[in-house]
Length: 109
Image 1 (cartoon, helix red, strand yellow):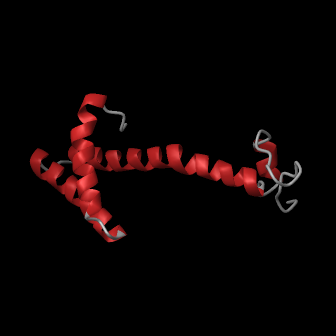
Image 2 (image 1 turned 180 degrees about the vertical axis):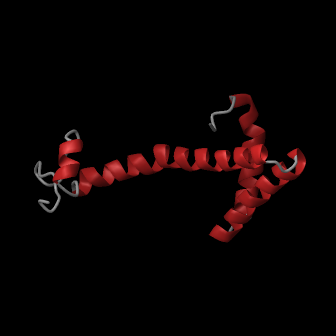
């Protein structure tokens, strides 16, 4: 989980911001992430456990991005544009569009 103690954040945030300023493409961003993982694996030694831990870090970062950024964004778009189908409507009765007069959206399927 990325919620480290506040006192550790300023130094890391400064380094991350400097690094980010030099990333000008998704490839650069991918390189930085890959290189950090390689440095960690080179320092700990290659083993199934260490590789598994690195993959776990990536997976948890992906899930945290989805949970904290993508889900609220998608929920906002549901409120703007409506749900997709009757199944969505049945499982998400709390989500009502803002602009379609209460219509849930969807194609009637």
